[in-house]
Amino acid sequence: MNLIINNLQIPIELDGMDQYIKAASCMLEMNEENLSIVKILSKELDLSNKKQLFFKLFLNFHSLQAFPAILKTGKTSRNMLKKQA
Image (cartoon, rainbow, N blue to C red; front, side):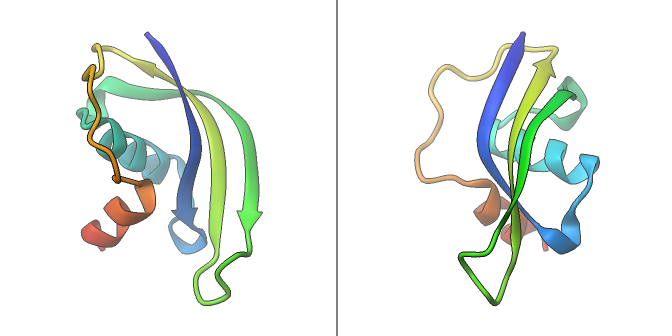
């Protein structure tokens, strides 16, 4: 199954394919091993917060499993990466 994730925010110091997969797996509550990046559709620098710069990504992922039908609201990649740091 292919998934498109919009507005995935990654701190610039954590930029990398592994971080994209880790953030997406946290957002979707899936195992990292079940996700792979098909294509980076867009990547832009978010300058809205001068203390912490982020890359804002639009990605196409391939999932080996079906994702949960109901996702919890209020969970963002930014929040998940802060918890892991």
